[in-house]
Image (cartoon, rainbow, N blue to C red):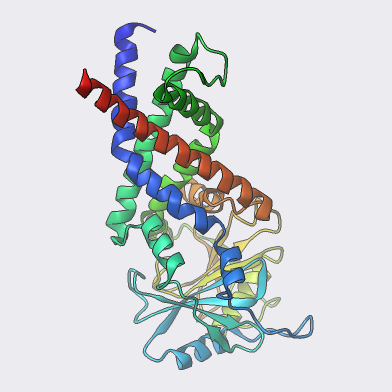
Length: 375
């Protein structure tokens, strides 16, 4: 590599790193407890669990669950039902003052899927974990904060790529992974910075890139909704279950019947989410039922079907766009939520190593400035 090219890459690496380092360091520090949020809630007693009941207990209709939620929180209306794979007896119900909101002030509660009774509301808006979550997601600044953190993530991608370009020329006279213990403290930290940077390279790229995608989630779902509505208006839909289908319960306007008809159209799938008409993930006239598969990968790649609650017609407005697939895969990958506790532990260790890389890079810059000042 020619000297002028080397200097250009060095300039790119220096300034992309300096601009984003403090913010990425904050994201690594706040992300570490979030990786183990489920385990932390369980250990601290903040986890809300459904009471034990005989296996196979019948589930209450979702309309009844919604009614009980509204009764417990008067003045609010339900927006979504969420179902977790590892918590089959619980519905997460999201409520707000009206359906067409930005959902920034919504309330999330847990309801027993068998009795419809409200179990409680997670303390997402208070305590240590709440502060970590808001700092990590949007810096308490809503969509603007998310997009800003996404920009910092893009700068991190630039810093990583430019660091890789610079790694070979600077390390060509050293053995791979060598840390020169006999040299000055700054040289030892430089070698350690280079070593840990290469070790965490793939992980940092994956987590950084998926983090950038996650900051665009609101915009992605708005685009998906607009695409679905446009397909419906243009008649570009595929009818999976007609309104007069005899192999499904007759439409009666209820939410439970709408869900049952969707499951009749896609019998090998499980419900992941139910969105009321008018919400961000549905259309103004249709209930959206988000289904997931039964394998580790397909359970993350959901399929959205629309159902008219009045006549029961089940529609697929179009194939899942590539950008929605990218978002659905990036959300669990970002927090190591694919392989249970062992993968979370690996994610935590790599996160700590990345903190050392960021801190050492900042240290090297500060020491360089002090050295130049003395000279």
